[in-house]
Length: 111
Image 1 (cartoon, rainbow, N blue to C red):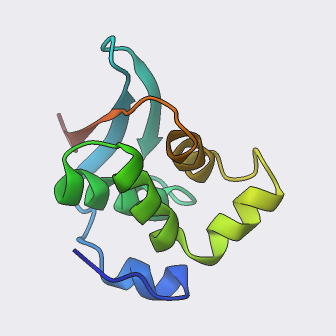
Image 2: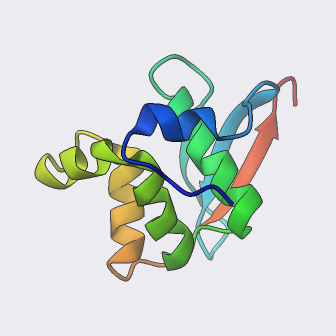
């Protein structure tokens, strides 16, 4: 498990590579896919964080979400001040605030 620092850029360098990941699906308790994070520019940082949370915690519960917020570093403060601007961070905030846990499914490229 990494020890998140003050900047997202530095934290991102500590995370496993996302090569070979097509997308990540976030699945609720009923098995419904609530959201997907594609491996494309502008979303690759979130993809790396969510992949790491899956590897470190197994699922996205309050503990994992709290750690994810620390990894997002300065972007977490921005997300708190601008709801909707960072939907992948907003999701973590919702879980920390008592929202239900989600399963994280990693979909391999070509899969």
